[in-house]
Amino acid sequence: MIVTRFAPSPNGPLHLGHAWSAIVAHDLARKAGGRFLLRIEDIDGARSRPELADDFRRDLAWLGLEWEEVPAQSTRLGSYEAAAQRLQDMGLLYRCTCTRAEIAALEPEIGLEGAIYPGTCKGENFDPSRPAALRLDCEAALEGAGDLFWEDENAGTIDAVPCQLGDVVLVRKDAPASYHLAATLDDAADGVTLVTRGEDLFIATHVHRLLQELLGLPVPRWHHHGLLLGADGKKLAKSRQSGERGWGLAEMREAGEDGRALAERLRMGQMPCGITRSRFPHGGS
Image (cartoon, rainbow, N blue to C red; front, side, top):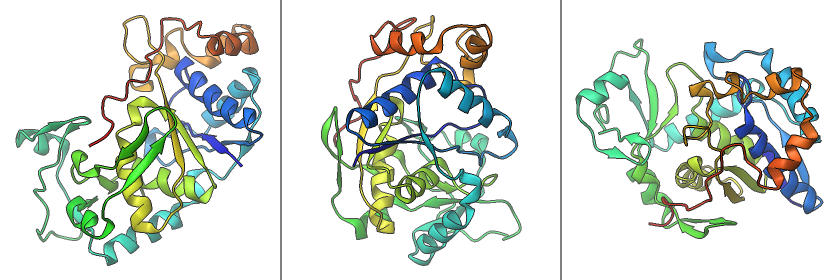
């Protein structure tokens, strides 16, 4: 059975890009007689606003979507801690106290997701009372994992090349887990068989595939879809307040717009300002 999920974070209102992502996941599951899950990813520290989760549910219902809700991330902290401890016991995590400014000052290599951490803290000893993130020693992790690949419904078979992102953070200084660790563990716990998300997260899948191998987790398939674009030609994003500038679902819903009609327009490709078609520029090795 196909199981998909929509997993928003309550750190800002949903916008049309979220609607598109939820519709893709919902429709792929429904077409196959599968299950569509809603998971609230609410461990983003002070940025999380619990009241937004109810808005999200109203937004999805307004679009005409039906879902099963699974436990929110805030109820799963023990699983993140256990996984991080397991990786530490394998010698694959190291403490990092570097700030973004300190990393930028080192003029690091710029990769597909921005600056690649140069490994400054690897092998160093620090005052344990100083706040630190935990990073994955990617090269050491790959030694035991061997050659890996993953399947995307649009891009085909992809060789996993996780070290192109460098030593990513798995436990943040200000949160119990990074997106990489939490999403990978949650998808396995929820029985997700088809991970649907925007193509901007395509490259993250390289890391997630490695984590699945290290932690003995089931391997789903992926479906990375194109991104909804705003009037400026850039993807809609919470970081750019897309949920509050005429693209917000709650704003449209409260103004009396027909959500089901909007969902049908999105399905028919009648996008407000267009959608990127998945080119997968980061696929392969």
